[in-house]
Image (cartoon, rainbow, N blue to C red; front, side, top):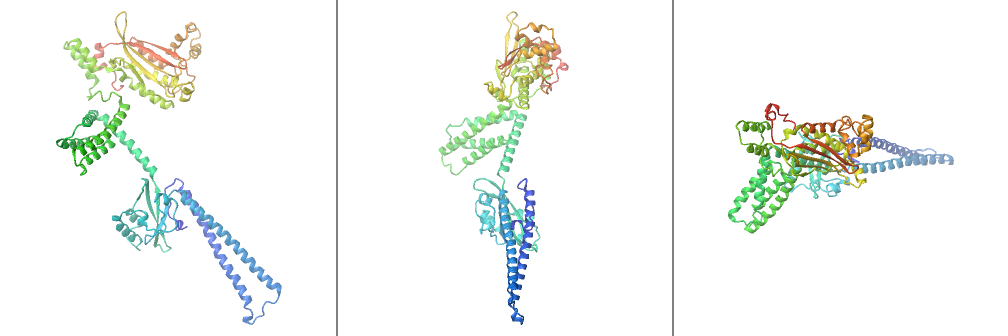
Length: 594
């Protein structure tokens, strides 16, 4: 019960602790009421004893003793009734105190915190919460607080000095100022994070009589903070890699060069170079927030400088073990980077940023100076043109974002084909229009995971992009052939016919077969969805795609099998020839689009 004397301030360890403290204060009020009953009982018992003593002592004072049986019976009956009633009141008080003691124990233990107290001599009291056995790994009763909190030997003198200051009357420092110098955490043998707080217990005079120690398990909170820090470090790492791509690749090259030495014999003359390389790598990996690799390099450097290394064999064994750990960590980092920026990230080597307008402008300069056409074409292919798969990155990113919004699961886009290089600016509007295909795939095509499982499919949807160059037999012209396919629900020809019946009741679609009818999804205003959503349903998206394909001289058809998927087959002319208008810097599209 001592824990609740003087109404100590609430402890912010549980979200509902204030309500529990209110309940504790109510219980204290009830306990005070029962204490008053005990006082009344003592007064009543004293009165009964005094009356009986007076009756017995009547002859002593020259008075006539009680001679009548009925008078004696009234006195004894009254005394017994009073004693019985007082016993009843005390029984109720006992029951209440017992219940409150159990309630207090449950309340304290339910907080999951360790509560104990110690006096001016540092001796712990016998009242403590069960959580102490778990959080402080000991039963604190009658033990010294320095042993309970496992204060290191070299800190015990300072600890006791601060306790003397706390219990010193009228000291200049306040309680909250002094306890800041006491241990704020407990070193748990199993790695749990236990924080310590201190609360005073004072006498009526205000003198500090004992101190309550409150131990709180902060392991989950600490792990959450650690996870948040790791996520922040990962974000910082990615941002710095994006900003300093070339330097990052240089660092990776240095690490790989260092790892290539694994297994090679080490001579005494090689040791300074190895240690120098490790020291350089330590700074390089920490620059990119590769904390785990940084710790590994730092630990390996310390191990190699250790006095326990007494031979070249010991040095090489330690070096090889550290290189194996570093190799594994490098592979993990590169996998994370490739998952975000593409698997060809490292293969592209160092990059230098040049404005696209300058690249196209240089073509114009070469033509003005009558450069060799083959040289111009080679420049366009190697410098200006980009792999078409790279042009589909915004398409893939939008697919994943829309799938997350709609609660659908998707695998990464699968790319196949020869991945030809194209002049993206020539087909910029077409590439932007692919957004409509991605929206239709997610909204109309890919089913929810439960539906896919019921149809015997993988719960994750799959979209594939195939791109290659083809040659027309008649005139040997090159075409860029793109196939965008999904494994979703497909297009129901009957649904398309039902929509066409409203849009064009007398149209020629009535005599077309299913494959021809589904080509009508490129019709303005036709949508197979019953309602308009933020993603699709207005019947204008696919018509916009078909229009952009026609504007660049291409064609698009759709093929679909109900419940098995849909395929968009696109063919557009392939050319590396630029018109004067396309070469004009002023006529180039807005470069912020891609």
